[in-house]
Length: 542
Image 1 (tube, rainbow, N blue to C red):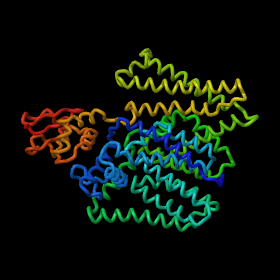
Image 2: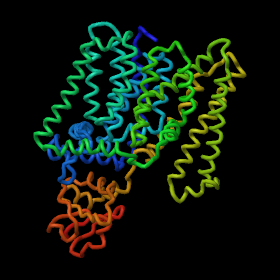
Image 3: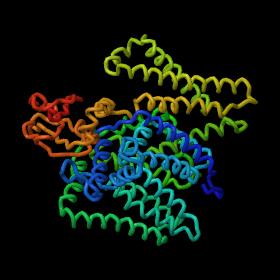
Image 4: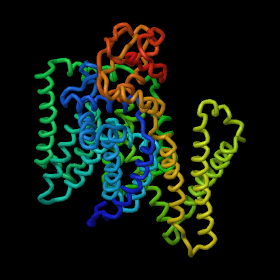
């Protein structure tokens, strides 16, 4: 579908506010998750403190398990705003905001304005999207780069002097995507081939010199980085980069099974899973929708590649979520048109209203039961979740009551046909999940992943040692190492010392983190400042 008008600027402002509030809420109480967030944040911290942006190091060891783009982005944020958990997350949060706006812009071109902004609202209320939208990982920047590539290709379809500029931007994305998340960007490039080849008569991208120039520049940046690595460190970085790919491709690294995506994707698309599936079916049956190889073919082929890849994990599929949102937004727009179009069937809208309304009633009862401690079947969760269970009960009640009002809005228009509260219906549908995600952030359920470690490291005596003294780490490999605790402890440690295998090897005058297995061997000659997650921080006795 071709449109001559441009998206309205105020819509972008509204979408930035809609998503931005959720990102701010998730950083109300910020502490890092390890792995992978704490890992990237800690390696980037080393780049800034050592002044060597080429060489990520882990306690003196070269560490090129991933390409360095994400380290550079986080290190840039550190340089501008200082080192903290929130600044580590700035690149991902900016990429998240950009991706929401790009989803609207792409939906505007592929579908229409109403479907576009409803798609952006859907995307912003996926729980998984919000979680990775604030985490300091590679995933959200990669999604933003891929969406920029797609948007640039759509812009390049238009004739004019700027066509080659858009082609350059699309081609450049391949190299930038590799620097951010390595070979994963190749899957997106392959998924674009049906659109690029089968729709060539429509867009003529292969005749756009800017596309080839962008590809050349992007590949040139990668080769320049490779050259610097070879000159400085020899073959070691390449062994690590390609070795990581080999491990992931050799088998199911996480052990989740071959049908992981079959249940994980529908579960993480909640509460919009029915709308997404409905949208896919309706679009597949719609012959008048243009760009089908992009709207449907690209995510389908990308999902097929992810399914065939032996290692499966939930954040790989994050690349598909803007398109899932487009499907959900499209079907919502169709429902709204059926509401306002004279003579249109009201059955689909009635089914949607009753489905979400009755679900809201059930969820409200469950939430109220949790809050009142009267819901017996969930009592077994009390021991696991503790105080968090109350938060979950409150979130369930917020979502449930919102959807109950959706059903009331539907009944109101049914009784008074001249009054069609479309906005009230949409507000009831979206407000509950949006408020629940925001409250989950404020309550620390989203964004506050290692509160115990942060609280320990902020104690005055501990903070003074970590900020001003050289701190070694004592590991007992024969007993196993809690790498997550080690990563988080390293983030809060300003001056890394040596990796040691015994407490007795700690140099005189040095402080040290002592892993759990080595804690019983701490002598009286060292002062134990405290213990967290089984690890102890020790310093010389004054």
